[in-house]
Length: 170
Image (cartoon, rainbow, N blue to C red; front, side):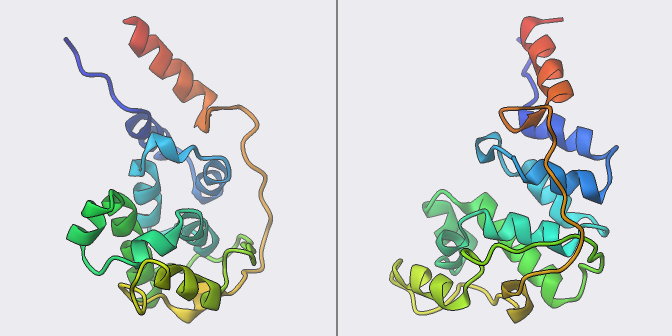
């Protein structure tokens, strides 16, 4: 019996033909139950926009991952994939690797350093498991994008149709 690809695999392939604006649009309505593969792929791209990196970081409940000091700790919390991506984003940010800055990001209810520290401390640790650059707590000016209109449970309609055909054996 043939193993079907996951939505994450198909969406990642779909993203490869798109650009930074479309990557960001997808994230606005991404269903996190479909996995982290597309998000990691986006975060690894040289032209990933700073706002897109922030979208991934802040919408992944970072307090859980930041309470973990190591990958093994994160694995025990069942959040090792998210931990890897957040660590990747913070390291790339600190290194100045996110250079594209065309899009806006402002989620002030989530981007609160003191509040985040308090939520991390609720997990019984004193500080973040890895450094978060101060600039990541600031809103970003730029173009506002709307999400895609034709998503099916957070997945582009054409990818959902492709998965449906695979499931039916077409």
